[in-house]
Image (cartoon, rainbow, N blue to C red):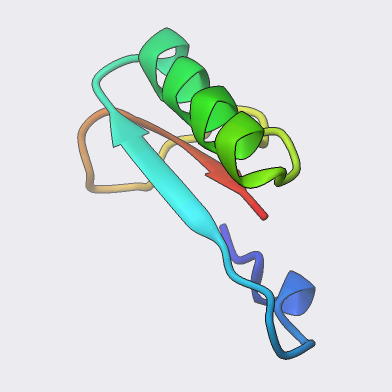
Length: 58
């Protein structure tokens, strides 16, 4: 899954959280988003060939 289209302006970054389960990944991403005043996490997704779940926040 590519989110590079969202990173077209200077000063933007994306944080991806990898976890064994979607609940933990979401909880960590929401905590980071709240601390950094960032957007909430994406829907959990898997990366083919990698274990666990991922969520991204911008």
